[in-house]
Image 1 (cartoon, helix red, strand yellow):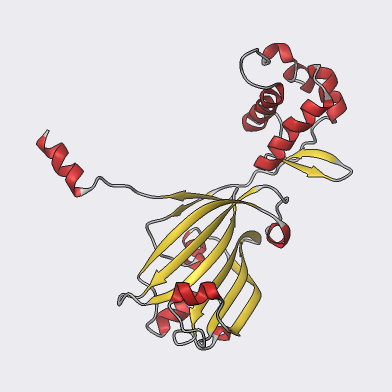
Image 2 (image 1 turned 60 degrees about the horizontal axis):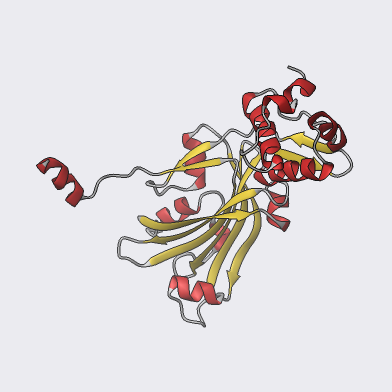
Length: 260
């Protein structure tokens, strides 16, 4: 099917199915999802889409903007709009406490890091509260861009008490391996996941267009004694991960089902 036939409004535009820009956006998304609009392929100019669909250029522009915010297309200044490259997603379990390096090794991928910051600093107010520090304490900070097979996936920013990691320069690859060697590897963690919009330096480092969706993950890790080991605030590409959790019935629910 050629583009003119695909965008013929007689095949998809209907009254009562929402604003026209929403319907056009859905039609274009359907073409992307079905493979008709292939990754890297340029979309027709707004003027041409408007002529084919008998819609205004403002309506077409709004539809394309929705897809750009979703990450389905990439807008390049002076070149137009292109179908975004296909990015395979990885399932990440929320029930296992592992390092990025261990995750990538398990998948047969090569984990790499580009250090952005590594040293001993005065704690921020957030560090003091999160790690239970005194204001005069210091923290080891590790900030790095994490890559798998050369593809940037996440930015990790970790803070740890210097009593547990006195020399952050001793961390070469895996932080958890380093903590394991000193008997300070965490055994449990609490994670909070939030949706964000990628902007500024983070979007540039992760090689995504500003405005596309991303994920912020804040993790607090603990020793078996309950002592806080680290607080890590990470930014992940939204198109790279599916976070998966296994859920079980509570004991009360299980007993209730047994009694039925």
